[in-house]
Amino acid sequence: MADSTILMVDDEAEIIKLMSLYLKNEGYKLLQASNGLEALDILQTHPVDLIILDLMMPKMDGLEACMRIRETNHIPIIMLSAKSQDIDKISGLSVGADDYVTKPFSPLELVARIKSQLRRVKHFSAAPANANEIHVDNVTINSASHTVTVDQREVKLTPREFALLRLLAVNRGVVLSMDRIYEEVWNEPFMESKNSVMVLIRKLREKIEADPREPRLIKTVWGIGYKIEAD
Image (cartoon, rainbow, N blue to C red; front, side, top):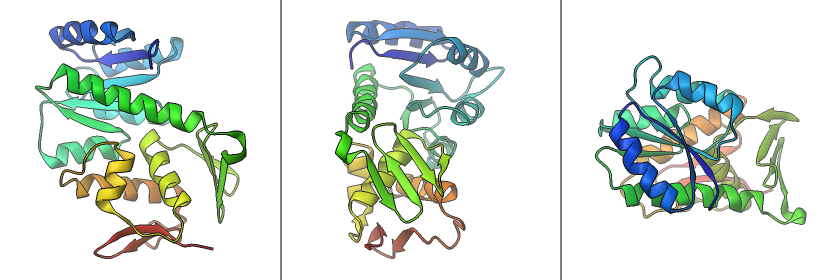
């Protein structure tokens, strides 16, 4: 989405300088911060469409910044890190990041992931009026406002959590495999990413289920995937 504003939070000036060339060439406006505290200040005064957030930074690291942002905002967040182990990726996704890119990275790949996240947000925002709301038991999903309510109480979801819930809801009664969930929610080919799907399911259950340990809404079909029961 041209004209979108990207906030890049990284204490490595060379990385920001490099990405600014690519992002501006794509028509994006770039805001910069060198740590999580600066990022939170910028979000108070500037509208932002997507955040690129480094994991390791002084003053406030990416994990804490992501948690703070998610308290009030569902802006797409792409986490950057020199750490490539699964536990580091899971930590980033667990606190609300929508994607995770390992340093060193290809600027073109990062741009592609940015476009993917922005397309997803635009898709949900552009739903026709007669298809805005989906009701599943005590849960209401509104694609136009990108909101979810449980017992008429709004629940803050990340864009990826929202995409997962909506995917399951529009396919009620259908068991969705992990690879299908990954490809539709992450919008990229499935690459042995079962942990990512499991983490996202767990985080979503924690937000919408009365008892996440005994989920009533999102059911696990062992060895196959997940589903929401049909009426």
